[in-house]
Length: 25
Image 1: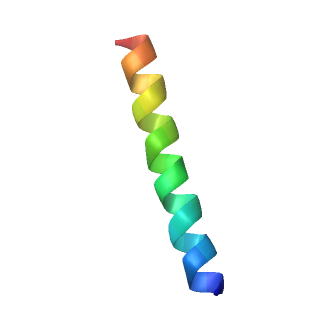
Image 2: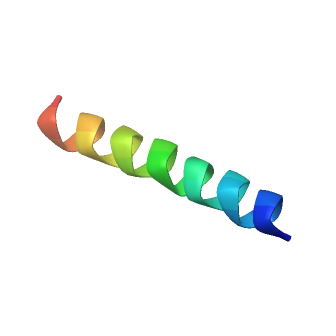
Image 3: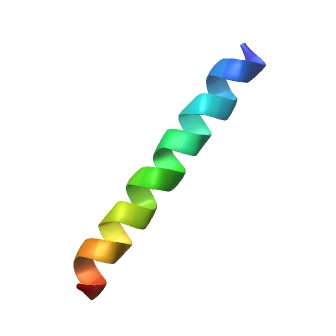
């Protein structure tokens, strides 16, 4: 279960970076 939340948090982090990159660029 902990691994699931760790992966989920990592995916959300990558999505957030992608969103910021699209706004800046």
